[in-house]
Length: 252
Ligand code: SF4
Image (cartoon, rainbow, N blue to C red; front, side, top):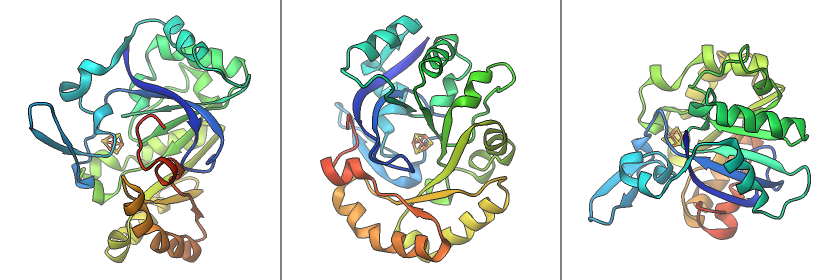
């Protein structure tokens, strides 16, 4: 059993496959909270809770009532068939932290089906949840967008920086890349050094950087600083196209 927060067919808004039509499955639950990102959700009872910009997919206690329970792979296939899709459309698993469900037979069978049908399957992960590539070799055929959390997430170092886990993904997967969300103010502090230190631990250093922000205005305010940083480091600049176009990050 796993929980699905939302599913939608859109274009990929971030990372190296920006612009590619993709069917998104956003699963509920995360091993982190990232209160440092400072996004606030106000619940029906007026209580404010803080976290990341997908807090509605992280906090089961606050938002779980609206999540859809998934018990079978057939349910995921039905959801997929409810969309009008090109035959080999990209599939993106996001969250929350989708790799929390990597051992779930419902997801394993779904990924095996997708790979057998030549879909590109991408996991958007924080890179701190291990994948059992020996037991589930199908995961070697997936793409991993490693969005390792930096100190601006507010999470402790030992929890967010797991070289053993992200290097196992890099070593086993057909494709992986790092994806960092940064803002102008953090770049002026020590975020650059943090990224350098992290990459020094990695077996591979393909990097995509994008501006932080949950709104078009915030994205705009960080864009130039991130572009300058990418130019200096030789990193790929990635926009956050879904926010730039729709000014929101739910269901788009
Ligand atoms: S790891 Fe990602 S989904 Fe989880 S709390 Fe942090 S930003 Fe949100």
